[in-house]
Each structure stands twice: as C-alpha cells, then as structure tokens.
Length: 442
Image 1 (cartoon, rainbow, N blue to C red):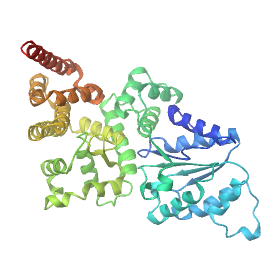
Image 2 (spheres, rainbow, N blue to C red):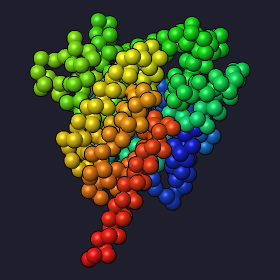
Image 3 (spheres, rainbow, N blue to C red):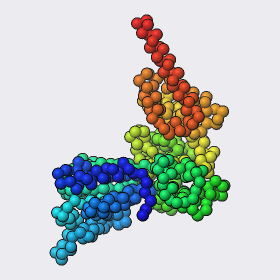
Image 4 (cartoon, helix red, strand yellow):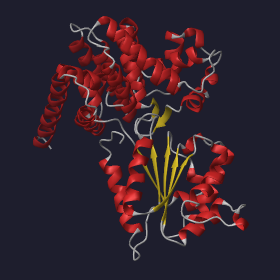
C-alpha cells in the first residue's frame, strides 16, 4: 500500500459526502470537489484514498486519468461504466453522459477525474458539458484534481456546486510521521534536515529519502551537492520545466529562480529584478513584461496571482526549493537579491501610503532578515519600521495584525523577532499615552 499521511481535513469532507450519498433522504450541497496544488503535492495519492473508501462503501466509481490521454476521456468513462453494466451491441456508440446516467439508475456514482488541467480547451469544454448534464442528479459526486483551479466561472450551473481545496505541504509533525512510515533508518538530525530542505513538500521528501536510502549523506560536502543536484533535476527540470523546450529551459529556470526570492511581486518589481540580475533576459519595453507572468504559468503552472498578497507568487513548495538551492549553491547572489528587494520595498513603502505601505513594510522586514549581516540587522530593522511608525493609528493597527499572523516573517526574523515586537510595543504605548494626554485636556 502507498504511504499516506495527513489530509485529514480533506478526507473528512469526502467521508461526509459519502454518508450523504448513501442516505436516501439527504442531498449533496456541493457535489463537485476540486483539489488543487503543485505537481507532487499528493493529489493522486489522495484520490487513491478516495478509491479505497469507494471500495469499502461499495460505491460505484469511475477513475479517469485525464493526464494520461486527454483525447480519450469520453472513451475511458464509457469503458469504466462497463465494470458495472453489461455491454449490449446497440450500446457500442453510447456517449459518456448516457453511460453514466445508466449507471446512476443502479445507485450513487463517484467520478474521479485526475489531472484535469492537462486537457486542452476543447476537452475541458467536453468535461464541463458532462458535468452540466449530470450534476443535477442527486446521487452523482465528482472529485477533480488539478495543478491550478479551473475557470468554471463561465458555467454558473457547475461553479455554484463546486467546492475547492488547495493542498499544502506537510507540517513538521506530518513530515516526521511520513519519514517514520518509510522505515528508513535515519537519525533525528537527518529528519530535521529533510524537513528544513523540503519544507514538507512530498515529492522533494520522496527524492531525499530515496537518496538517503542509497547512502547519500547531505551533511558532507559531496553528499550535499549530490542531493541538491537531485532535487534540481527531478523536481525542477523533470517536473516544473518538463513542458519547456530544451533551448528555453535555462531561461525559464533563471526566471523562476529569481522570481521565487520575493514572497510577492508585481510587474514593476519583476522588471527591476530581471534588469538587475538577469539583464540578458530584459525586454525592450516595459509593456513587454505584462504577458510574462501568464507565459510562465502557461508553461510551468507555478506562477499565479495571490489575492491575499495582492501580487504574483511562485507556488510555495517550488519557491521554498528555489530558495534552498540558491542559498546553498550561490550564497552571495542570494544575499544580494534579498538586499536589493529590502531596499526596493523600503522605497516603495515611502512612495505608497496607507495599506500599500503596510504590505511593503512587511516585505522590507522579511528581506532585511534574509540578507543583513549580524552587525547591521537591528539598525536596518529600525530603519525599515520608521515609515510605519508615522502612519495613522488605523494603518498601524493593520500592520500589527498582519505582522502577528505572518509566520514566515517571524521565522525569518529569528532572534530579532523580539526587536521588532519591542518597536511595535513601544509605539503602541506612545499612542496610548498621547490619547491619555488628549483626554485630560479635552
């Protein structure tokens, strides 16, 4: 059996849906579930767990790997239905919709569609048509997986019945559970190193544990270089960049590596980074950068707009790996890019008041923490906070709330977290004292 840990939340959603499917008196509220996430995050493994549950509950299910052959999805659905319904000669040209409806007459049906985003536009339209024609049946349940959320907004009848879940990397606890289940004799130091390097990304963890089993020790110089090269080759080159042309791969790799350093970027930040650090890839005009994020995402599926961060982001598991590779292999460049971004975000914070200043200040502090020398970091953090200390009470409160929830920033600050917290506390005390004085003389 394939190793499987975590995903309790997602599986609980599935279990609840199955209970409803098997209850003749209840109806599913959201009969379509989409699990999205970067390649190697565990989407197919999750579907295999769903398949086991279907067998346990004796539910009819159809599993279609869209990525294997998108053009044959219709045929595959018809073929899958024949596991449950005998084939008659007059049904040879049956459509997937009719075949599934026939199956629904026997009882609930679970449709598992893996790697749906690999289908082209025409094939996705066929899938949407299938869902539109079947989704009103009270015992039809669909689970999709994709690297990026599919644009169902044009088909309201489907979109309103869809729930989406984004799969994340393992936390430390689940990472340790996974490593224990691997039955590979590695000590606590190596387990910590696996989590530190992979940040719980299942694909990278598999590569590291296999390499450890093969005798590669990343604590040695030779073993470290070999392990890093394996991660670059198997995750980045064979995974993220698999659809790039050979003569373009180096350029895409360089762009992703650079754009993975900021936690968020917009078009001006992207342009400044490229023209500073990979000038041979600069574009002739500023307008020419507008299509680059879409171009990167169309090819790699790892660059997306993040509404919470109000900017483009490289997907977190891939970003973490690029950060590791650059830091371990090209430390000077790693520090230089962070330093550049610290200064850039500080300048932008000065130019953009209000909530934009809140955002740029947080990013400035993050890049200071990742780039400054030990002797300079306290002073730089104080300078990075100065503009925020001049903001209105409302905006400063917004900053303190976002800072308190920003675990990545607090982790990057390390021992200097107390320094920033003390600056915040002192300013809040000052504001309270001013309010007290104002009330006395009112």
